[in-house]
Amino acid sequence: MKPAGTINCSEPTTDTLLTALKDNILGKTEVRPVIYPETPTNISVSFILYGILDVDEKAQLFDSYIWVDMFWNIEGLSWDPVECGTDRISLPRKQLWRPDIVINEFMDENKVPDTYYLYVKHTGNVIDGFPVHVISSCNMDIYTFPFDIQNCSFTFNSYKLFAVDVQFSFVEPVEKTLKNSLDAMQTKGEWELVTMLAEKPTLLPEELNNTCDALIYYMVLRRRPTMYVVNLLIPSCFLITVDLFSFLLPPQNVDRSSFKMTLILGYTVFLLLMNDLLPVTGNTLPLINVFFSLCLALMVASLLETIFIINIQCGSCNYGLLPLWAKVLFLNYLAKLVFLSKKPSDKNCDPEEHRTENKRCDPVVDTPPSEAVHNSTPILQELRKISHELLSIRQQVDKHFKTDESADEWVHLGEVIDRLLFGIYIIFLSVSFITIFVIWLSWYGKNTSVV
Image (tube, rainbow, N blue to C red; front, side, top):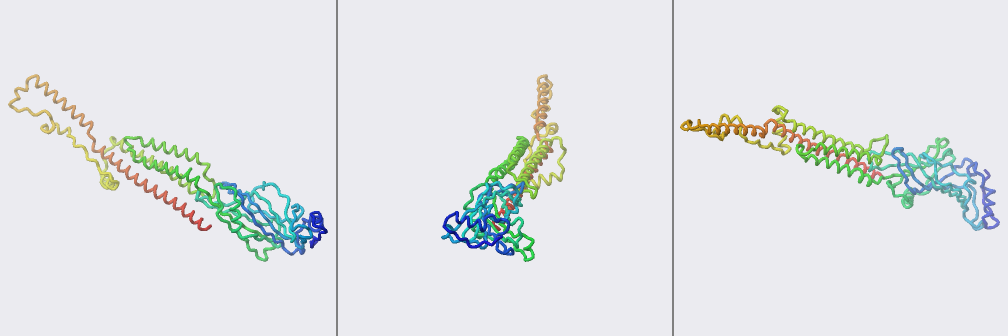
């Protein structure tokens, strides 16, 4: 390329300046605008993040809209602003050499409108700004969803030119880039920009001839979790709380199993409806999925426990005597542990005693021997017959309503086991939920402190 020099204008008009530029730089896009080929061209880069359009966890894509500014110098080019009438001029982009800068993480076509002009200043500096719709790859970790913080990067480098020809530098400190981006941010969606970091990889001298120079920006994004807490976590906590308090329903008087089955069905439908809100990725299993699985498992376990207790209490009449070890362990020790003392049994009169102790249980009093001769009358004999029949009826009624001691022990065993499993359920539920929430908070605090 012919070295460009100072441009002289015969009059301060655009036509005069444009004619002079055509003779010096316009149309010469084949080589870099340097006087000596071994001189590298320094490209200064900055950008403004205007919007976070989408974050696709399943495809691991970060969708954003940015405005990129690039600055470089055309060596030897200059003119007098007073003589030429302006200190800068807009020129068609295709008429000048431009660096082939790309974003390494780019995964799709840039669909923004084309821009056709750039500015050239009287000192030879070129200012080129253009919009970019960036759909970039981003390695995301959603283990702590919906309290996750993601770190996505933009790597600016030349597509073909090595560091010996093109070198990059920052226009401004990254703190100013962050401030400008926050001020210009137009979208207030699910994600917010927390901070921004930048670095320039250091190249060894022997790497300049075969490695491209680069600038790396790291954008730290934080998810706004309010929608997920309201739509996912709080309803799940409400449903598991209802399942917890369903243990207070008496299994013999109320069909507790039907209530729990209805609750499980409702929770399953809830998870199917809310499935679109959950992230899907093959890298890690989100902790919230563990939370939902735990809630469902606890509901199923409580249903199985209810079936077991109902089977013990309702089938006790078909069981034999309660084993001595179970009676000692459950009815003596564990019953005190769960504050469920044994109910006192009814002191009904034993039907056998009616036949052995007539003086205490038989309402018909023995007749004295002196009156035995009068008992032979037909009326008294009939009365005695009726008395014995009434006594038999009473014995049968007493036997029907009297609680069998063995069945009573089985029913009490079911009550003790139900209360014991209820306590274990509360402990396991509390420990599991506290553990999950502590992991969420610790990861969230750790990532927040890092950024």
